[in-house]
Figure 1 (cartoon, rainbow, N blue to C red):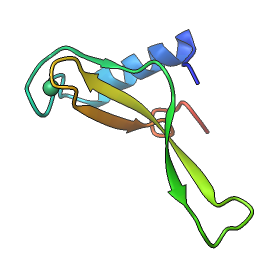
Figure 2 (cartoon, rainbow, N blue to C red; figure 1 turned 90 degrees about the horizontal axis):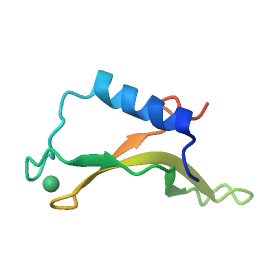
Figure 3 (tube, helix red, strand yellow; figure 1 turned 90 degrees about the vertical axis):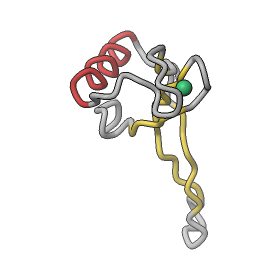
Figure 4 (cartoon, helix red, strand yellow; figure 1 turned 120 degrees about the vertical axis):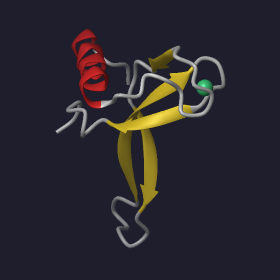
Length: 81
Ligand SMILES: [Zn+2]
């Protein structure tokens, strides 16, 4: 699911205000970009037969040099309720 223009601005503002690390944690490169869409990690909940998979939505921040990916919670960023 692609982010709307408003959501992209929300992500930029969030990262600028709440993360002080504008460098890659692995290679120290400063060319980082977030992927402009929501992605999800899946959690298996085997005891819940009706809904055995829960989605945990995230926004990836990617280093253009080494490819290291960091994930930020869409919920904490305010992109979902
Ligand atoms: Zn890197």
